Image (cartoon, rainbow, N blue to C red; front, side, top):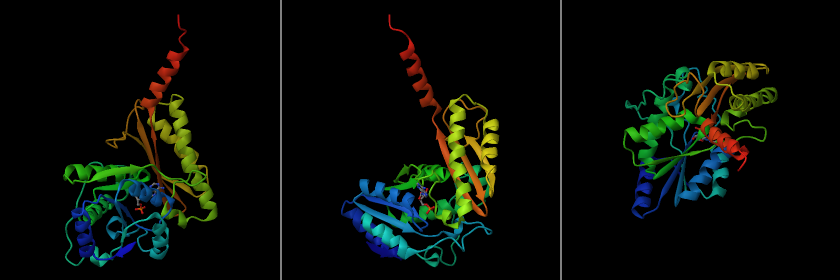
Length: 299
Ligand code: AMP
């Protein structure tokens, strides 16, 4: 695996790979890798001839009071995790390389970024889309893989690619979880033992919510209140938002009658964690109808 720090070097390599007819798969990350990231890399490896992983903690996507300074960084550790997977290139530029003096161009997806995390992290998605577009121009991938754990980010990137006619396929990988259901995140390293125990309630609450919906709950407001109550029974937990939204537009629904996404952000102590669950109500209806049909006695 080759480690590349300079944009011009990465671009030249990408250009050559393309000229030789290789399919380039790309996985952008902020490093401090875990099994969630590695699953994305494996997916890329399965579909590509050459895989590029980037590790870059992007200052543009952090708010002034957020954790940019203390975000965990350990490139040596990341390298050792990526090597056995057969990753071809690790692109890890400095902040000065990505944002030299005079930088003043930004990319913004205007609507999908208004709600959910966007409502609480002004400028966050502008930072994400700007860096991802830059990385796409540097790595020149045929496809890129994103995690469904950051569902809004995935939809925002998909939208940017469509709107700006980027010739790149965007693939999603399901959320990878710890043995007890907690979604893997580099930020889990901030949690104390006790906080870690409370954090499990997030996944439990999402599953509980799904059971309620399949049991007939159709009111998103009541559902949201029940999820909040469940999570906040645990010490250290404070819900920032819970939204039940249309999985395509990310707009809140007034009644749960087709597939919905339950998305939430929770502070566990000082650590902000996000998670989501796609509730496939349409599939459930089809399954219910099939079950009903089976029950009809054949004459
Ligand atoms: P990050 O390093 O947090 O910016 O994440 C880099 C990529 O990994 C993003 O596409 C994330 O959605 C994805 N990712 C992070 N955690 C997980 C997880 N637990 N399961 C699946 N994908 C993840």
